Image 1 (cartoon, rainbow, N blue to C red):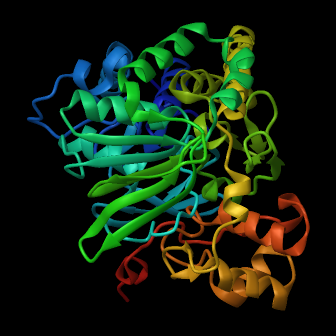
Image 2 (tube, one colour; image 1 turned 180 degrees about the vertical axis):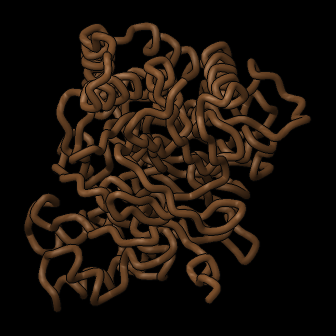
Length: 454
């Protein structure tokens, strides 16, 4: 094993990062892998702490064998000294050719010649009246608590939003013994049927999703509108909603989980010099790459941080990006043609999924003025609309006037909704409103981590 003439750093140890590392190792390259998790696996295959009693089958369901195989593969590479692995480490900034990360031992600089970003995705959230209350979580946070600690975050739970994660988290909670009061989907039955032709690119997954949906029975409600969360000082007490027939209903609860599919985690890609295009199908800004994941000089993207294709797609994209990296280094790389065909099929499925469970743009544009949009800064929809009146319809100018997107999440939770509100108020497209400029640090960091001893 040789480290090679060039240093390759991979950010992220989910399915994409693990497969990228595998391809590099097989070619004799020893990569550095930086990951925020305690153990490799990413969000979809997140591993619990040692001593956790739930089995892989209980944690990952039908994906248990895949999850365990990936875990064992990466652990073996680390144990054999084939990978330099830095867990529990957050990359805070990128200034080519260096990454600046916060590790358990403090701030550290990682130089690189080539960079593979496999940063995954985060929840895509839309503002709902009352969502700033304690006891309201994202679907991803709800799933993390269940996987990592075996905890249901409430005694009577309502899940709301749209997308496959909504059904998945609901069935996982039911299997764990949690009480679900309702599952509220903003996508109607007929909208979901419109996406079916594309989703049939992966009929096995469609069948699996239908079986999970069947387990929800009467708990599942499609075509929901006009949601609002009622809460007291302790958290939610109920959620009001309008069903597909127009009737107003209410579900008592003490916890609400919300989410509208996923958004690509792209902060580091932007700081690394990648360009972006607005994708109307996904209703978000996504990095621009070639078919092999090349995004900028010496920078490669893979997994959900590039396209939301799920765990299988992330594995394939990780291999493809690593092969592009090897080829650019002048090293022998396997033929990627089969993986590229497989990835194209996964994308057809994902496009169908995006059509079936769309981002609720109309709902967001009608957000009441007194609804909080930016939870970090407490900015309401009315304040954001006022900012458009003073500063025009450009997202960064509105940000500078009203502070939307300036908090801990750096716009991860509010940017997409904010862009819809700006575009609606200014009478322009979301594309013309633009995207917020990323800036370091992309994660909150203690000031002491940036102070060096004299």
